[in-house]
Image (tube, rainbow over all chains, first blue to last red; front, side):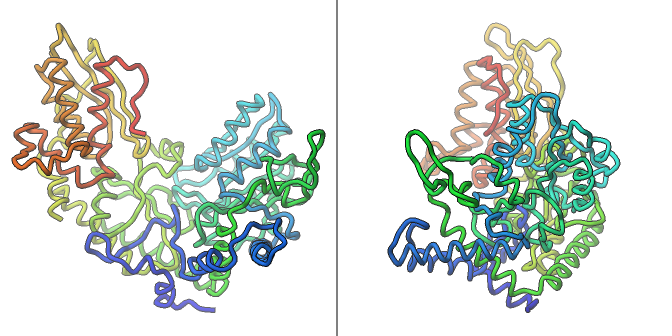
Length: 407
Length: 155
């Protein structure tokens, strides 16, 4: 187990470059994390040595590709402490996972008069699929409000739960503000009404240990690329008995046991939900990312990330006219802020000229921006490979932003 | 740094701090809304056009320094122009910023000569991610002149 920051930094080749004549400082990890050498090597190795389609060839390459692919499924099962490997479905990412649940689980189970409950903190991928369900079925979307600190008002969430509520979808952590929701409590509250809950783990999975059994959720969705794996691969975990009841999301190859023009028999779980040739290299890369994380001391990593968050928050208080948006007590290492006189886009451009990568915009969470009455924020989102020096560079650059604007 | 200085030069900072013609024209006979969904920039443009002549033009909205300064400078440049001249200026400005013609090859190209005061915005060419900020007001102008009913979006 390691928490050797210098070694970790060396593991990420992309970080060792200069951008606009400055060493790159990458603080856009909530958008996507960088990939360690081992992930890049695993994917290259797969294409150089094992590339073949899975589950269908009798030849050696296909057998090897299938073994590697299925070994990652077991890796995922252990990573999130699922009871059964068949509960782990490979998808494109969090967005596809949520759309799958919306279409295959929720649409057939709701009708006009029913309600689906989300929170005001959600990003667009945990809003729009539910609006689409409502449009199709006549159900209504309910939104639990948030406080000025950017936390869900739990009493209000409780009030929104009723016999009409048929599904709850909440994020574990907010991508725009970093707020960690008290999801265990919220899941228990929903379950007291017998309502199934989907947890959107896009932002949480890289920072918090995930145990789907302990959380008690019914579905859990996450993306590989936000946890040091490649883009285009993610996981939907669902409780076996719920997945069993569901119709497939897409039809195609690999998801059938038998096909005739009269009748098709679907394959058992998890293949029922994996139509078509999957993103095999993506799965291999995701497995390598989980292997990489398992070599780190995750407690030390989490402590380091929290230290950086506190360090950055304290340092930002020294900069006039900057206001942090989202001040929840429990956060993943994300700081969203606005400047009283300078727009987020101008800040983003000037930081970029200093080699500092941040996100400026609405973070695919326009309702959050509107709640705080800001058009956009600048967001620093941290990873374990960031250092105090990265934060120092960012703070110095923020002073420079004010200088460029002659403030 | 020199590119940055060119991007945020004094004229742009001044027009951002004190945008000109930043008001609603209640009896405008043309107007249009522009929106950049990537950064949330919004603006509404108002025009009083009589006999093909732009008598008055104004805007309201919020956004980054580049979008505000560009809108402000545009309204200044449009006062008293004909609709045909306004359209020609749009084409010229848009072409310069989006690099659809290779102006660097034109030996004596001088953006100030071609665009007048608007030449201060030419440095934005070096920041491709920001070109949409600068062109939002102009695309909204085109929409107003063409009486396009829907909100103009940069995306």
